Image (cartoon, rainbow, N blue to C red):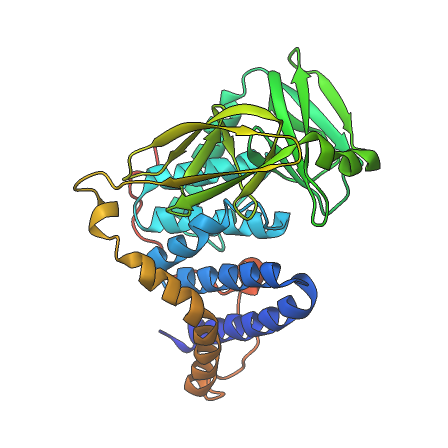
Length: 349
């Protein structure tokens, strides 16, 4: 590794240490948010250290919690998709990048920060997703506030008051905000090119508690995908709010047998569903089940490892390297560029 690249790594690590300190006091004012910020930071470190398995282990459950800020979720999906691509899992990379484009139709990833093969897969996933919306209209949501989370048909959407694309048909909109009870709206786009305006009012938050019930899903593995009544659902701290009545569920994950069932939600009450999936015989999930404990250990020691890495980098650099200034571009949140790109694995056409 030449001195120029060492300086870029050092600059990124020092910025990361500063960002971690600032995150605790400013960006993540509560314990849960601080923990998520720390995990995101560890995952980015793992990616830049070419520990792609660790990066995926940290990010896969994080992106389905429903609690990340818009900026955090955008960043997490970029790194998760790139990590899958670096491992050669093009299918998972496409799926993750499509989630990113669903979240924000205008999403981009920068080839200065990610390998060219990952950028190619992202561009293909974005093109295919937008092409699938052959009949689209627009939702224009206002009044929800800058800290609200918006889900449409179980998928997070970027919180914006600008119109965004939605397929023609009926949709379920869920609004979440810290300290408020989530509420659900139904909206329909009847024809192509139509714009439907949706106004969120203060009383929507106030009356939500009386109109809905709560479902708690206890999942094993934690990053299993959940469908309620045939629609994907994003859980916040393992919970979601539902219209009272009977519902069906499906829980699935690669390498495991699906689990299905039904439950009933009552107004103002909480229903709990436990779903422990069984590995399919001979799959990687069964063979590598012991990794659960090691990934949990990584969560605990990751923050300490970041500090140690920064100190070691300072000592190794020893102030050496003449000039110092031009470190080149840095990645999202100030991180240094990733390791050299691996050869594309089925990424292009």
